[in-house]
Image 1 (cartoon, rainbow, N blue to C red):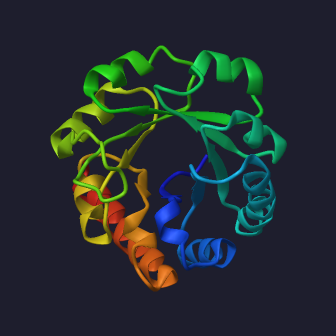
Image 2 (cartoon, one colour):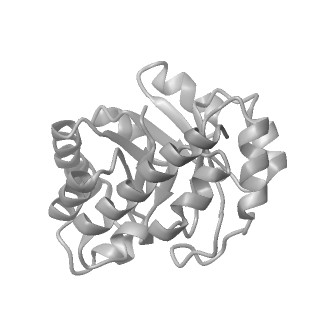
Image 3 (cartoon, rainbow, N blue to C red):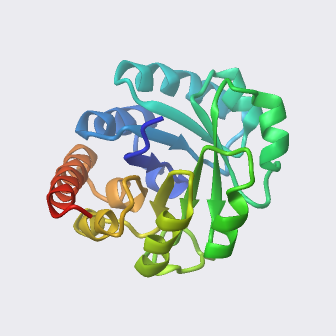
Length: 214
């Protein structure tokens, strides 16, 4: 599980783009994991797209995670599945997938992070760290909450929400080693260059943070 630079897809960024070419460019730029998250496609379409993305992510030794749809994740042999509070409960997901894939879970408060410690999950997506254009209804938690979440969680925290290349340093300095981006990569015309910028900023921030001993 390498979620250090974690790309999350969104319907609005693929209206005039080829899905597979875009994802491959992002992977070439440094993305380590891709979460397939679409809400307005048929099950058959998602299955066929996921089969191709499975091939592409394997080509770059990157993880493929499916949002919500446990059945599709199993069908294409994804590396992980991500669920939220309105989806199938993590305990039920674990019964279905066993140890064949890891499970991610969304938390929007420190209380939810604490509660998630008891769930059969492998990482926690925590946010929104910053204001974000990707979701209409979101809860802003901020950097201080992220710093606290990292401290209290025994499970890896993935920071999500409004993370742009120039904000990577702040997130890493808050103690978080995993950043999830959507607009921070897909919001740019040159996805490959945007992913490179994220990787460059991430690598520099991690090195500086280690030198500081934090």
